[in-house]
Image (cartoon, rainbow, N blue to C red; front, side):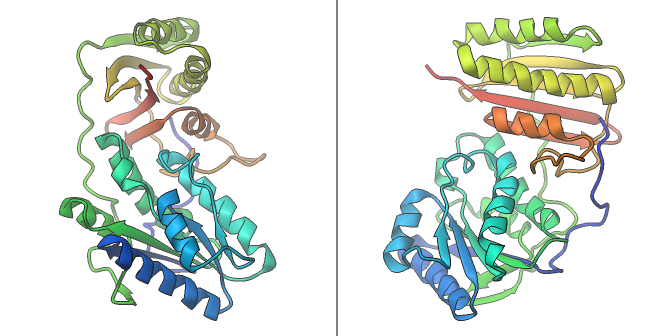
Length: 319
């Protein structure tokens, strides 16, 4: 499952993109750090995009109202979907930079609302991928607040994803930043028993959709959500057949109140950003993964030359 790669070089704290972690403890520290950051930007004639959970946005609005230079964006459609966030930031920055002013951003994921270990892993992976996604683009500065009430291990992993860190109103290089790898990926957990398995090849896509339907109906998934899963699964399986050796293996099971559809094949995805930004009219490849990110609640992609590719599509179940 090969795909075009932007660059084989590791991302770094260079070019015009600045990516800064801001650990804070409680409401007052959140406000102090973020308000100071906004005021610094305004003093420099820069614009600011604020993308934080609504409760935090309300706190900030009381201190810094929205105006022509400060924009609060609605993150409800993307906050819990790590694969959609890079594309969202590209759109927010492009829209706010239209006047030619430098732009800063404040972006905080809803860590206290994370619903599964897989989602937490993908949110941290997103933080690392930001360095690669914007390494060659226009200059801008992103501050990422993180409440230290969380686990120390999670904070250490986030530090590995940020080239810079803010403390006491000053920003310094983050000594824990790792430009080579986002964090130590734990191996994918084994499928939950019982799981169904189906080997597919050319001509088997209708049967594959039937297998998914059978599992989904047992779990109460139907209607629009099932149709969206069918579309995403068809795209991923077709990529397996086209780029992964002509066949693949589907496994389905339920986990954390989600239906998980796993696709394994022998292909390799060279570019970790594939599917994370909207394809343009001339782009070759990546459309299937982009569509999967839009249609599913979570998409996990693990790929290596020696082991091939595993893609998991998560769809939330309602009871």
